[in-house]
Image 1 (cartoon, helix red, strand yellow):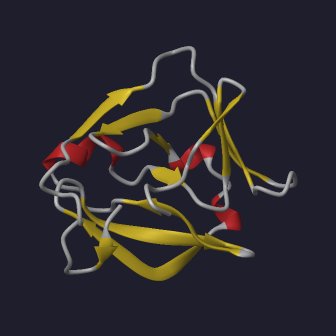
Image 2: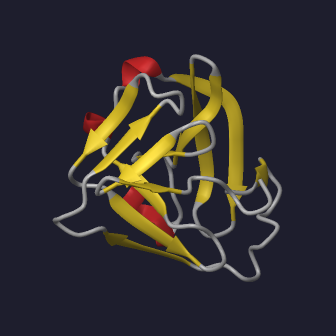
Length: 135
């Protein structure tokens, strides 16, 4: 993602965002990391690929249990994607984010939700790493 609002991404000189559909065969589900609640299930995730960062999976809001999420005070900035707004869940602060007004490179993920940290993300049944480098 980036750092606090107004600060550039620490890796912005090395990053370019490329967004593409994940493909018709991909199914994605997001759990709470404790084997309990399923926060999202989608057969239409979008894959965002950035240099030197893990692949990110963005989900349509209709596929996310938004009643489990609340807006957070946290906003981060990326030179390529813009300002992200964070969402929290019970016991999982800032577990997801979205771009309400993305920059050009990230327009395909406008208002789509991406999970990380405390979430457990599965793509086609396999766990994927939702962490950030160094995090």
